[in-house]
Image (cartoon, rainbow, N blue to C red):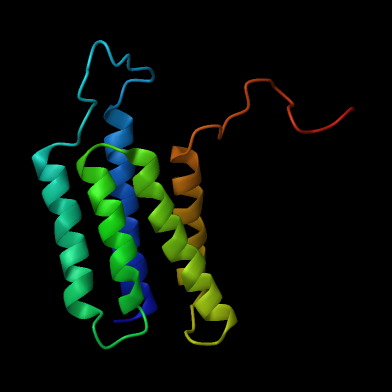
Length: 141
């Protein structure tokens, strides 16, 4: 398994999260939906398939340690916990960058751009990615 293939799987998982988030209402009162909002069985199945693909191909590679993080993300995704599904994927991206810095793997420039794009997409899913006030955090002008 190559770094590009790992990033392809991460990209598929990020895409599934973005698709699920796009279908969520901006505010959900628990009194209206006591069990929360869960992804469709088809979306869960697709997420599982990507992780299964990773598990079958990553055994003899330095990426096999990502399996637990992917499973953690899957378990959170299955019950609709978006933020808990994002955190393990961010950890995978962090680990890939550390592996590159430690010269364990080589990330091509195109793959490096994809890694940054996926990180940006995951950050956009997180709450607080848009400040409430225009110009917040820019100091006094």
